[in-house]
Length: 226
Ligand SMILES: Nc1ncnc2c1ncn2[C@@H]1O[C@H](COP(=O)(O)OP(=O)(O)OP(=O)(O)O)[C@@H](O)[C@H]1O
Image (tube, rainbow, N blue to C red; front, top):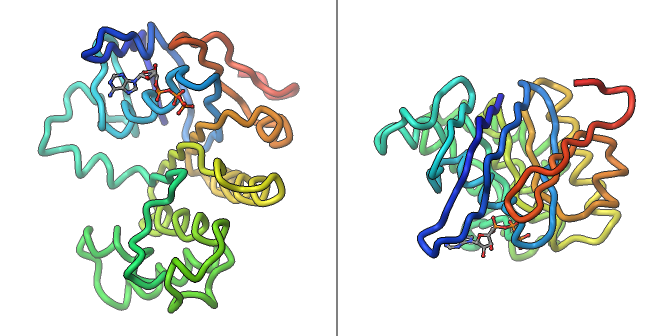
């Protein structure tokens, strides 16, 4: 779950990237955050993963109040969040398997456990047959799916994704978003930043709309009351 209470973020430049933003996302919900370029979408995700700290307000993520999380606690908090990026940030000199295994290696998982979990994650994104391949030999959509497998391999209670379909064509984008929706359906909280309104509409999910750092709409598809 994620809760923002009156959260504002002013960068050192003096720019208010977020202003008095409040919302709550329950465990297992899939929600989009959308808005124009520069509206504050990435900033909102960075506050959740503690890449940035808010100037004012309170944020609770997976029951942890972030204001109380000190530098030493950040790695622990991030283990509870699977992160997906537009540029997927894969290690190009490692195999698909090794890329997906990374979060488990960092967490100190046992070798046979790693094998089992990596294959389960690759199976979920439809890439089980490509575990030995190198990311450079995969299509852009496949690379993005490796990034998603890496994000879910340690079974985090939450996934956040920043423009995960930014480089993909409409059909692939829909497939990738469909994957995220599946994770939501099994109890994972999913928050996806996207400017693709058409795609968001097709998915029929809740959408937080930012405009110059302000939350101007919390759109819920019909039949899904708060
Ligand atoms: N580290 C920073 N220092 C100063 N200003 C920043 C910093 N990061 C972002 N900004 C500014 O804050 C505002 C919000 O940026 P943010 O990246 O959150 O928007 P966004 O909605 O994700 O945009 P886009 O869709 O273009 O990625 C923008 O005006 C941006 O220039």
